[in-house]
Structure formats: structure tokens, C-alpha cells
Length: 152
Image (cartoon, rainbow, N blue to C red; front, top):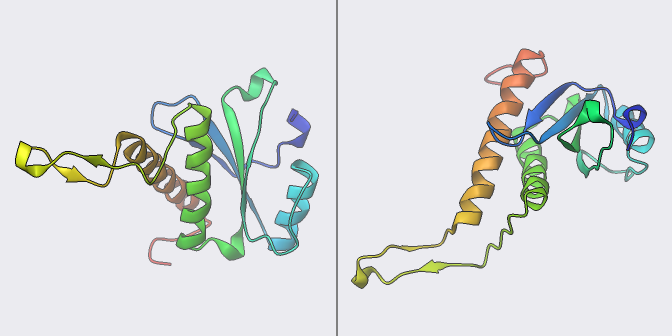
């Protein structure tokens, strides 16, 4: 992907507070405009696409750290769809930093030995912390850009 194929940037999201990796967030005026931008920038768009995350590999030094593009339409900025797409982004980041997240992996230490039985493992907590950070940053930036208002 070259500079010419990066869509207009509504804002950027860092994957974690200290990460050098980031995502472009493109918020189009309509679903039609979003899909048109996706076809032009990514080379694909499903006719019923409501939002998407596209992984990228960039060689342009001006875009160092860019690992993905998140596409949205203003008419579909609901918290559920945003959380859904940002979870895809979190998985792309985990893949990028080579953290393998397996939801079926359990850390199981019997409570009788003074341990805790828990259903989460470090990789899962890592993923959830990335999802949390991406969502917080997305909504703060969406509010600042006038795309949403608290309480909407």
C-alpha cells in the first residue's frame, strides 16, 4: 500500500498507549461513500458491508507504524458495531506483535493449593486491554471530531 491508497484520515488510533503501531480511522458520510473508498483504497468492499478493518503493510516512511485501516460510515457508528470492528483491530495488533490469543486456553490452578481458578490467561488479558484502549480512544476522538455526542 502506498500513500495514495490511504483513505482520508478522520483520526488515528494507537493500539496501546505506548505502542508505535496505529490504525487509520476513516469515517465516510454514508455507507455508499465508505464502500467506494474501500474499493479505491483496499481494492475490495462487500455490497452489504457496514464497516471493516483492513490490515496493511506500509513501506512509506511517513506512515511508519501504520498496521491497519478501520472503515466506518457516520450513519453506522453504533457502540456495538464500533466495538466489533475494534475487536478485529485488536486481533490484527496481537498478530502484528506475535501474541497468540486462544480463547480455549485456561489457566487452572486448584484453589486448594492457594491458587485461583480463572478462565483468563495473559494473552486474553492483553487482547482485552487493547480492545478497551481502542474503544476509549475511538470515542474520545469521535466526540472531539463532532461525529458523536455523549449520551447519543
